[in-house]
Image (tube, rainbow, N blue to C red; front, side, top):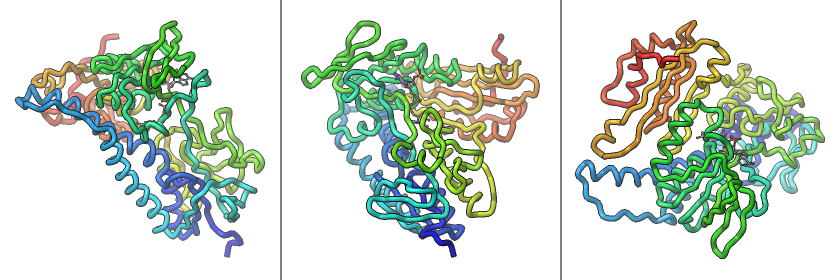
Length: 451
Ligand code: NDP
């Protein structure tokens, strides 16, 4: 019998921690978990899930516009922010209970409070002290704001889900996932949206064709996209906010949101004192099996800042449990992880961008198509879809697939299986399309883009 209260203590009840705790419990481990906020973590409580609900809600705006082309006559649509938020809150409350239940059904004991490490086997939660053989840090991350005067006036993704009123005019700072997703949400709900991005083009790190195409599409939907523009100062002006921009101009808005990246939650956990190494970004340093520099302490998810996506955290948590309690050592595979940006239109991507593939493979073949989707012919919509395949010319293997257009996330999930399985361009060519879909273009692109 172990001398500790628990075989495993998990710090953080988010996606990675829940999976690790649940699977470890299934292997017979006695599990404890501490969560200081709400079970479910960022993704369920104030990230992916509520965001996607708001995306669904805001997309109706496009559907209403398109309907007329198909013969519908609609009254003037009106939108009630408070109703949307309340409906979202009910669903999130339901999911939170399920997440807590997942732990408890696995026989785990839940603690509501902030945990800190006293030593390598001792965890403090408020006035409680517990001991554990293994400890898993799954404390996630938090949004960061730029250090400018008036930064306290900025919302982040933490607050935006709970706004009482919908801002009529909102500025969103950043050109990454969160900025572009919320730009689409507020734009769809009828706010005047300005995206301010300091760089040359949004979505740094994504394929350049995708970045350029998406930027054009966002502008078509009415978003004001200001590139090479940053905010230097924010001032309150009555109920409004005045933003001072790097081009010398000012912008008056009702709300400003910082979507300028996230940082791992490692401050104040007591890591340094017990020898758990962190890197310059504050992330816990782990090996391929998610083990930290302290032998019995592991970490998974955003706190390790590997690939900050929920399904990756879940995979890391599952591998940890299999390795440590299941006697089946396995390390998470971080290659060819697909992702979607739920902008409007969305982006789906897997594998390498053209630029990265050229660096890695030298010679690459590019297949690219851009077209007006069938729906837009009758709806009168101006959108265009873009798809792109990046192929290693030497082996014919498809090493990257990218898309901007409706359902890009849904479509790329399937393409990701092919890429993970090592499919060649010839395999794509041998696959019959499903007609009429946009996705069929992925198997009908025949002409290489001329270098
Ligand atoms: P990202 O890293 O995606 O984007 C941050 C953006 O803010 C970049 O455009 C960056 O510019 C800019 N930025 C950073 N610091 C500053 C600054 N000081 N002043 C001005 N601009 C700045 O972070 P997000 O916050 O959008 O999202 C965090 C992470 O969460 C994502 O990277 C992703 O891993 C995950 N996520 C995933 C989602 C999904 O799967 N759909 C949805 C939401 C989040 P630059 O490029 O120049 O550095």
